[in-house]
Length: 86
Image (tube, rainbow, N blue to C red; front, side):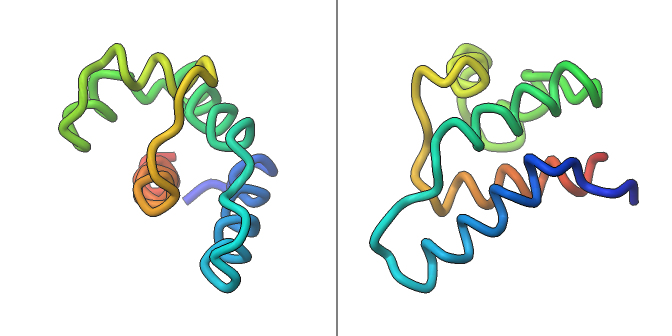
């Protein structure tokens, strides 16, 4: 597996802190950037992500634009999926 981009590492670190404290959810811009990087730089299609997580492709596109974010638990699952694909 390739080395994870710094943005994914930052997201994982923030998510682990969130899990430990349950006070501050991971920064939504990090999740958005991670999805955008997966799509634009690693060629993981929005359709593949959408299909895997049973959401609409437009939802994944909104995640990448930072318009909405899923629950932090689902964010972690999505980031793990992306990490496995790159």
